[in-house]
Length: 353
Image 1 (spheres, rainbow, N blue to C red):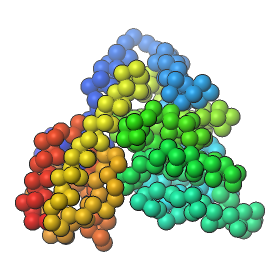
Image 2 (spheres, rainbow, N blue to C red; image 1 turned 180 degrees about the horizontal axis):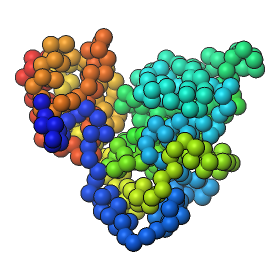
Image 3 (cartoon, one colour; image 1 turned 60 degrees about the vertical axis):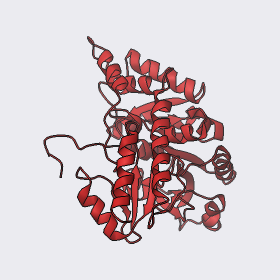
């Protein structure tokens, strides 16, 4: 067990367990001078606006919020009505990890398709078309996909474009939950914008916290018409920061010219690849999903899981993803080191998997 008064050692439970990158903290410190306008009326947020246009196209509009759930829910709320529905895969973050926030705050119904290694397949979107126009049923309005997915897989650019084309052909919009968009873009070797405007998505949740930020993600609209009244929606959704400069400064550090996001994502992805290569040859270990980004999902004998949870340092060295199937999730963070990975591989070997 860890000391409750101090930090856990670096583990593999979540990329949210990592701290903020020093360059992000330095950017916040630089913003902490004198007085500046509140609620986004400051030079840092003006530069954030310019940065979003540089990343996602000249018409893109971005809005910092406090966290990823807010980014997803307010993005959905902005482009739907209460009689609408959102198509996603079963097990999507908006489905199982947001405490029903999309249903409560956006008032929409989630229509869940069976995933293929975490991905939505185009044909699945047609399952509800027969009831379009039927007043007894919620109407599909938005398709939401996560890039990378909840199980660490990454859509190719072509896969995302196909989904967007299918959605638009049925009169729907497409939302990209980009909590780990940086990891996906790094894995594919493409600019961030390629996974948004480049695939003709409509609205994106841009993650910053998991890739080295302190606090804050953003909602990005590729079509400014969809952002109509979003300033009011963000305020009513309790996500308008009074000292906005400290959120905006983080995006400048992460997504500016130095591409800290890419450096962090490439490192996390490389550590996941190292971990996967190290454990896949161990007897009793089965990788259950392709390792495309910074997550490794493995099936282990239950005694091995229990032994690792008991013996590894920290309160939460990793999480059991599927209790029934004995699948664990090992997440690599921007600050995961090769020695951390090698120690976990050695622990799995010695646990008798």
